[in-house]
Length: 206
Image 1 (cartoon, rainbow, N blue to C red):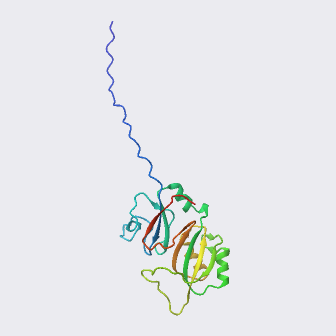
Image 2: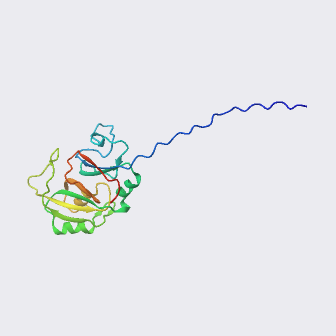
Image 3: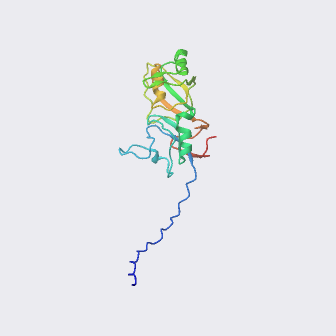
């Protein structure tokens, strides 16, 4: 007896191979972040963000810089490089010029150098020294001074990345921060880059 014909199986078209786009070339950008700019590209409240200054797709900040702080911010599209720069375990040195209220004493500088006790634990030892008033751009809006209280500039070098760490360190030793400018991260220095300007860097940790 002849066998009944087998039902035909529906034929599915062979899956199409979609060519993957080649990975974007690594990029590293240095920005002089102005005062009152958020270290992000979007803000629902309409405040100034990195989008107002850096029109480069695909990059994101390697670390943070507070809205009320100024200076060097690095951005990259390379995850490995971002980790090398931002991850505290690499202890990449970050140099700040800090205008403080008061006259720093040697005892206060020694406290900063030895490590300061904060509410989230002691800081690592920092490099701290008095600094002659640096040649910087005018801040907009200007710093509010108290006429009866002197001010001074410090250079602080830290190898951590806690939230608002420099401000908390100076406050802990009795020297409130009035202005905070980051001028160097590892091998990269701000040099003559004006606020709001950026330049392309070689995308690797030298």
